[in-house]
Length: 567
Image 1: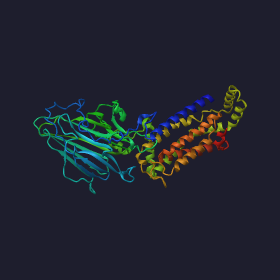
Image 2: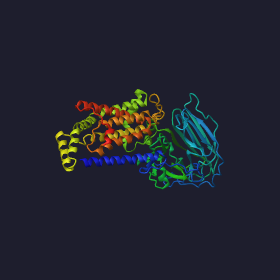
Image 3: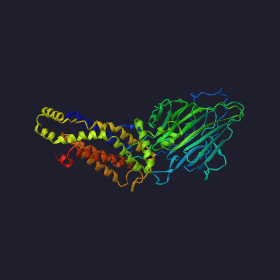
Image 4: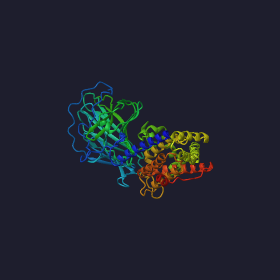
């Protein structure tokens, strides 16, 4: 039994070291050594992120999307080279937006309700186009010499700011006649909504039918520094959702290696660019057949999008296709109301089935208390109450082990020269006292998935961002500025370890003290909300363990680690 326990402890210890080293690599801006799935991809030194390239930025026409009628003669010639576009600013209660008359593209989106971590109280710029960073939304027509996001367009005069008492604002761009085709692009902004309606109206002014294809895409550089989370990484990159394969993430590294595995053709879903707390997504109407794509546009520049065929446009006629663009925070309730499956951009991984109910419960508690910090505390209290009898079983087993520990230590000292007799005698004591040495482990193992799921809920929830708790904790998503909570966490960890029965083997006993202390170091790099969750869990565990020890008549003896390491 000793050998088994020793092996288990060494495995846990070794895996812990692997995790700590991996996270330390990420913390220092290096690539993860063992778990590269969320590797940091930064722009090459001295090379700013490229703006949208002229040719490569336009996707190729799709053969997978069926045309609705026989293709007519494509307009002769190609659009003339576009002059430099002009920037057009617009604003609502939630957005400050920047459009470019070159293609009528959305090249800037500032979220007025969410502060930037880098700029203090200044709102975060989610979409932007600068020499340092590119993240933009583009649309256009392909399948002929049509209007792309490189084609000059003209802003139709009108209001560019949502006035007081106004619920809707429209920004309209129109193109010149190119080969007998005109394109009008209208953005519809609504008060209180992160969803932007984007209408494309194609007018055939020529003498032959045309069959253009509409593309929508999000273009972003490969910088993944926006996770805002030290010591651990979150996913940044393209994602595609379909009812067939559900949510599919694509790492920038996979795009570079041309290892892209997504559903190419679908009639539902969305394409998105995801980062920690925020996302953007193109949404076409349900039932619209589209060809999804993820591709590399240029050096350190990537695109995710969809292509759909418009109905044939006869001479003198027009066709209109509507799309929606979501640009905003990963608020689960908002995402669920926007489109099926969009809430999955808030990625809980394989523990989604547990994480979603926990998030709902956390939200309900917040609705009553109005403070996310206290909501975390109360949620942990409820979870500990739900697992009370399971924990009680584990702590009773630990109490029995602690009660017979002096007898075990005496026996080990007496039989230290005869390992076989020592093992036999130890098993005899366990049988006589009806003690299962692993009885305290199994109840705890059952709960681990629940608490890991809660960990990801707290890590992924944008509600924690800039959410205050008490006093000096003004943002639960960032580090405790004075490291008070990590220090308390370390103390509670030490107390909890001291209450547990020590393994008879001195090496195992030392490891039992070393591992919690090493894990405590990690909490100095964790956001305050996560540390608060663990502190609450530890305090309740200590209280329950002390109560059960007292109830069973086991003296509350705290192990002195200094005496242990002197031996």
